[in-house]
Length: 265
Ligand SMILES: O=C(CO)COP(=O)(O)O
Image (cartoon, rainbow, N blue to C red):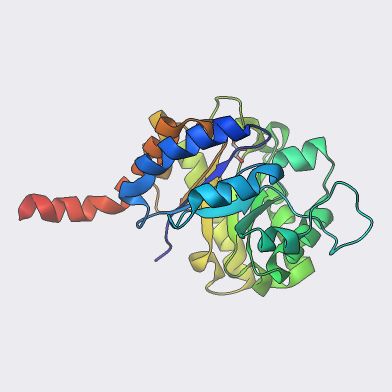
């Protein structure tokens, strides 16, 4: 059974003051379901320390938004995976579409970052997704598979074990336009089949989450498919109520059999 996970990607947002206010409110609201669902917050690098302290012993994990493909040395502006591990990060996003498109991170570069995160003992969250053009040309799965294949080429297929894949169609990120539940479910299923063809058991075991304009209002329908193991949330993770409502929607996908039992009791 794959445990659902909800990851907040704050992107380049926040301030000391705003983070504190957001987290204090958010932690109170997340308390009811934080055992059922894994939770992680990925702030910008300068706030890792602050967020780590505020998360304390809540069980909510700290994550980062990227890691260098190099181990150390003359790489001005980069942050190494071992530094992030030392700061207490458990998860690191790699290959976010904004990194790929705005900062020209290639599939091979992303794969090297993925390997660094693994080597440092953290869980990589590999972000994959097609552009609108690729989807319209029927090339969505080919694009996604080549992003995953680059990691397999770098680490071997077992390198993906224990990692998380975030399916984020580029055209749905920050646009208010979500993939339909069917598109999400079909893509996750196809991705599992692709992984399964490389390594039996991998497709079933790996957690695949969806990201792209997830809000409290659409979370329940996006999470309803058993193919979807949670979400990677941008904008809506900057609002405590909205994010916790998304968490509730995710936890509810688990709670249904229990509540039926409760009703029978
Ligand atoms: O890129 C995303 C999360 O990594 C999704 O962002 P939005 O939720 O703002 O669309």
